[in-house]
Image 1 (cartoon, helix red, strand yellow):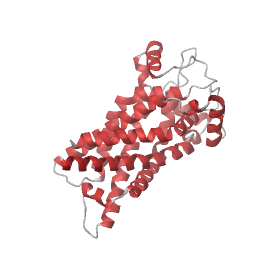
Image 2: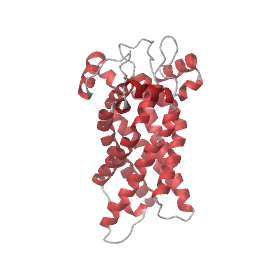
Image 3: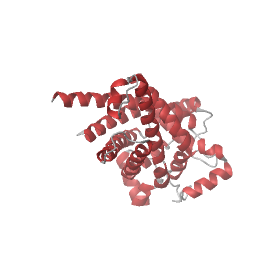
Image 4: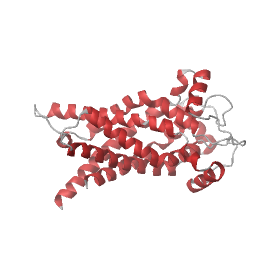
Length: 305
């Protein structure tokens, strides 16, 4: 039962996050793939200019390009993530470890992230491609989520749905770092308020409030983001739609690394970091506030039954 409560709380948290922050996700994705070499995207000076330009050229609809696959992907991803993460922690706890170490939190998060990655990569690929559709786009645009899947399968085959899977797997470390930092900081705060009494992970929730979860979520997200952001750039560039000739702009992860270093330097791996910070730091706070409070609500409901 506990794992399904985790999944429900995670899914609702993921939906709330996407609904609030999607325009910044569109801006981030467009910055990530812009390499200045014949791109089919408009040129943006900064985050504010990007939002203004997209609104002027494409309307509000442009700021919500790829919204449906984003909602689907985020809701499913967070639901599965918290489910697998809860299962992994429970398995380690059942083996006799009541208070899990940082290493076991890391292993639990990495395990959950890898499983979610294989389940959701096709949805994220479609989201990326729909976000990159603009008036300058040369190919016939996808009309929706179903049309995108159908067109990709027809034109590129099933394997195309797993483009970017290598950097996606590397990005598992993002969730692992985030959750490890989150869990450890939560224990530090809880222990500082327990008047010298050491508390376990479950009891620590009773000592924290929504403000604490906002700070914990934002702080853990920044730490993870700074270390793993280049993998997001590599993935986004790999997931671009091929041109009319059917040849991808980048062939594999190594090709992205080589070309980015050659033409843009290390700075190229941090394109879009500003909208990413603006999107994900508050988004992480929202996610964990919703997650922890839904978890408390479900726990109370279960206790009353």
